[in-house]
Image (cartoon, rainbow over all chains, first blue to last red; front, side, top):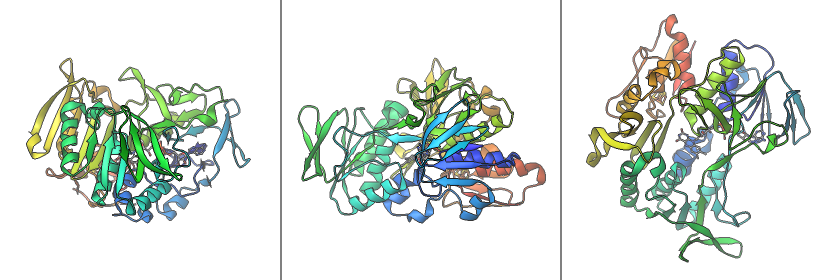
Length: 389
Length: 64
Ligand SMILES: Cc1cc2nc3c(=O)[nH]c(=O)nc-3n(C[C@H](O)[C@H](O)[C@H](O)COP(=O)(O)OP(=O)(O)OC[C@H]3O[C@@H](n4cnc5c(N)ncnc54)[C@H](O)[C@@H]3O)c2cc1C
Ligand code: SF4
């Protein structure tokens, strides 16, 4: 078995194969030279300096050696021959396997003119996090371009370091597309109280620079927001360029069936996978830590013959300032939203998102247990993975 | 089997409770994991291993 991408999705696939009794040869290939590490702390504890970088590896070295797998690190896959299930690498390796698992994740989107400009960052890797932290320690003014989960977490961590922060994005409030207007409004209030200057509904047109270092962010209408450091958090693109000549169907992710299978003997896991979710009746691609793990467990089972559709309930969490926010199911900006537990004024509540009367998603704000218990109210929850609630 | 949990790492996802309700719970006030049974019986072993694998912050340690 060959796993391409040895981060949380790829590593969990390998571990699940072993746990399920697979004893054959197992190889994990990754573009990065590091041992597998975790990403969620990068925008939180690592950026804030609460955790040293030594705390982010996904496993202890002895756990990795017990896996009895070969790790080929620092050598990106460059191409895939589907019929032969052979992967060619940039370093000239030729790896053939019975099954190839694609777990190459995402690459952050950038702004035109960003390349090579000092002071402009993205955040996906540990090196990105260390470089951003080093720059924030010497800077006064940060502009975060992007008002999604990652942008909002970076804004919160940077405020905690005493940096002046402006966050710009197209939405009326950060995360409106995930939380709906009511909860996103509470999030905007929280950021404003803590000193983040929010610029909602703003379109970024470019960057200004002086001697190769960024000096500002240009908005439509002509305003320039001054900045010593800029983080571009505009989401990411699935890493599928290495599959371009494989003949596999790629369209904002590697297209898979309900078993997360792209072709005979080729599977996809994690942020890169777009699979047919039978319970929701649509093709989806999810970018979160829990999906990467659950999908890895499911794919390992399917490789070993389970033949089960993968039909999870979506879940992710985000920590910003003192808010621990947990999101279950398919929340939507156009859903009817009501508070079903707790109190918004106390910043402890559960909001239910409904469509046609049925609950499609739940957002918990500092009420994680209560939010989780409402998973069983989600429409179709009984058909989802093992009827778990 | 011996189970330990790291409450400082826990992000209150509740994945462990879903996987093994007899062994894990969450505190009402902040959702942090509570270990109900540090020495689960053999019938629960596979669910507990699953819980440890699903935990998104590796806060559950299992010694066989
Ligand atoms: C800063 C940050 C904070 C996050 N916070 C949260 C959070 O709070 N909650 C949450 O649920 N989710 C969070 N996420 C999302 C979560 O980390 C991802 O969903 C998860 O990492 C996906 O795992 P993956 O294995 O699919 O992809 P990735 O983790 O992206 O791993 C892909 C791997 O493939 C390798 N690779 C890429 N191209 C090649 C190639 N050509 N050949 C070989 N290897 C290659 C990469 O080096 C990488 O190791 C966060 C993400 C980031 C970046
Ligand atoms: S799965 Fe992990 S993070 Fe989630 S509640 Fe259990 S111990 Fe905490």
